[in-house]
Image (cartoon, rainbow, N blue to C red):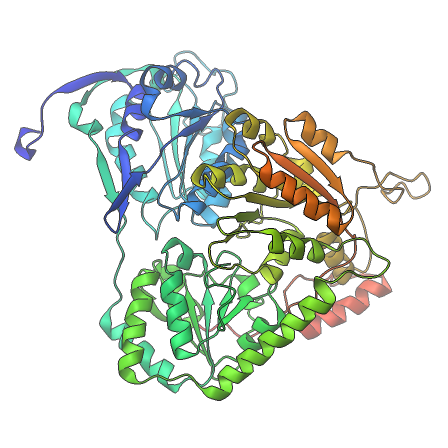
Length: 632
């Protein structure tokens, strides 16, 4: 220790106390700005952590404030929402007791890892010393004595460790922090804490608890790759950019918009990349892919050069490998993660999005790249055509119907102000917001669709609010999602975290019903209906549910509205409130916005005696014929 210029002093602490003290002194740093990497911890106590971690937080947690959620899965969603709003520069720790408390966090871990969002999970675990025999809630594996239910975290974590001795923190925690702050590797980090070891003491070196800033580097692109990219760009007649979440995390919106506008390259946004450029930009086509709009889908299908920036290019973006139809299409992949940069056989530029876009702009200027006037006119035309559809068919009332969800989104978009955020995740809301929402300057739209996790929205909204003291945080969900997890409204009340939840009440999982009809031809099990004695199926009257009353019982102010003017009034009143608000909006059940025109591979039964299903199978097979071969 002395050879490294460090003090030989030590501090005797329990493992849990050392953990709390260490986390209180970890910072992230990017572009010279530092902030707390883990400014708070959420947790629910049980016998697995109350006398270990709980005691440590009471004695040493002044620098690590404790928040009390209502559900273990929810607190991980809050952490991922917080990380998303923080551009992955900060996150929250989440602690749970042994057994079901810990396994409840696994879905949240999967959401975070799939979406490349840093979260720190601290599940309690069995007794490492074992002399107690099997303890309450311990899994006894017949051929592996060191297995526990926490091993379920391994496939959904980017880093996993189990602390069987207190001194193991000395290597485990720095590695955990490294993964949390590495843009290419980040996701759920799980450090399992055996309940007995939490209370074991060790003489930790004092320097272990000194302030440390983890620098998040902006990896520059290799000059030769930029040169290769310029060769492709100069030859391209119809280039297009697909912008993913990496643009937002890199805080490269300004660079992307400047690059696209200067060189006349339209931008389609993935779900994670929604808002990568201002919706008012002439180059912004909006949502791209299966859930995108037809204008973006049309331009993508004809692109001869596709520049992916910070995107994983999953099936919703590629139309299950059917959307890029130009016979000579080429790809450039800009990503911090080489696994994603190489997709589609792309020319890989493994670099930070902001740095890569700056380098491309400089190189394109020197190379004399110019916007093609005919292409610009075409981009303008498809944008204008889509705007007319929105005005006449989506945001306009339909005679004889109550408000469609598209109309509700249009009203909300009009009411949104600079500094407001909207949070959506599963069901039809992410598709509709991807297609319809205009992210203007000073607004943000946070969509979780990598895992499409129902029940992410309300707790994630709390995480966004923790990072956003001003403006409204709108959480838009369907009634099915609300029923899965409304309880974090209690946490909102307890912590005075004001969010405004908009519940689209369409009496079921209508987007899945719509998909079901398109792939099987029959409606089955997707609406909130009573069971009928004739068929013994859920085909009776709709179940009556008082969502507003439920929200009020959990501490929120609530409205139930059916008409546009009522909704506008509720939004104005909610903006003036300081408590959590829930606006329940009756929406038309079977009214959907126009499709994107982009195909999605959801298979129809290959063998069936049902004539409707057999007909749909033939339609499906004709769609599959459009699939492109992988570009590897």
